[in-house]
Image 1 (cartoon, rainbow, N blue to C red):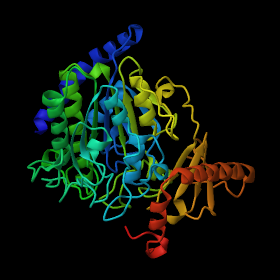
Image 2 (image 1 turned 90 degrees about the vertical axis):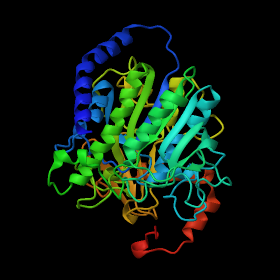
Image 3 (image 1 turned 30 degrees about the vertical axis):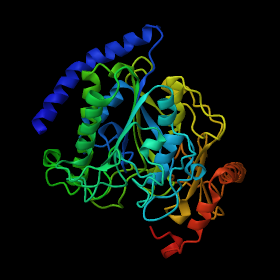
Image 4 (image 1 turned 180 degrees about the vertical axis):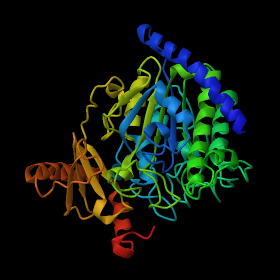
Length: 467
């Protein structure tokens, strides 16, 4: 497998020159384009520093790096939440998680789920004539709700075809046994999760989709979420490094990404495909061999400091994005919704608040125009870092009660080392006003009965919730 992987990468490098030339040529030609295909490839718990093109000197990630060389690499891409389910709900709906009702990690028997009343971009594009597929993790129902017809499933949110797990691959990324395909259990799988998910996506592309229609393809892999299992070929580069299993897991994910990229090229689809790669939140683990890298940012998964919410973000769209672009313009997961609808020429819903803005201006180096500021509230987190808002260069971080604040200039201080709350009272008051206005608006639209039930749950140590 590793020889095949290396041979494939050599062929890709040879092809790269012609791909870049074709992309540049396409920018000169102004013929009316076809509606683009949409691919969103989502990693699970991948940190901002977990790829070579994001500064890692350890991790081998040739396909992620190649994707970046073919499009725009965002250095300030954000997840919409510091934990999994809410972040995913924002990608699909364009709405901040407390507004769309998925504000917490969905497991067990909780009432929250991605409601049928929410409008997802796959649903809107399906109605506009797209064929649609979701493969990989879902995690937008509680465990008792997944594959339960009494609750919305991927098919109810716009996917013609789906193969998913409720949450993590079980018992690990190796030989998972908990996939459901279109409502039917798949059974034990003799494979590792990300390559298996990629193969299912390829099967759909080759054998199932309607080739007369543009398509939406969501590929939400499980890697590098715990419990990690990495195939031997992807460990070989890392020797006895104590984090070899984690590093190899990123390379395993990267291999799966390459499988999909190759198939798009093979079918002649790459040039008319808007391809988005990102992660659902920052890395797991705290200074041990299990967790990834924030690239030096403070915080990790479960809080709203930069390390918990700033993630890799790469977009490729030949003819629309200059290859090899690097952008520091802030974008967020909820922007995916608005961006893909605009790219497809589908109107944005006007009957509800859409928090996400179109990333399209950022593709050419222009600021993103926002009607709602960047806002985060992460329910499972450090109680001191649960709420955040960013306006321009400035970010305010608050505790759960929203009565203690940290103020940072993110452009000057991306590691959030210098809290300016005590020295800049006017700026502090300005951002506090914005934070409370956004939060009041979000609460007015979210499902308050679910939130009240969660608030009544018994608290764990230090005020944290027991999950």
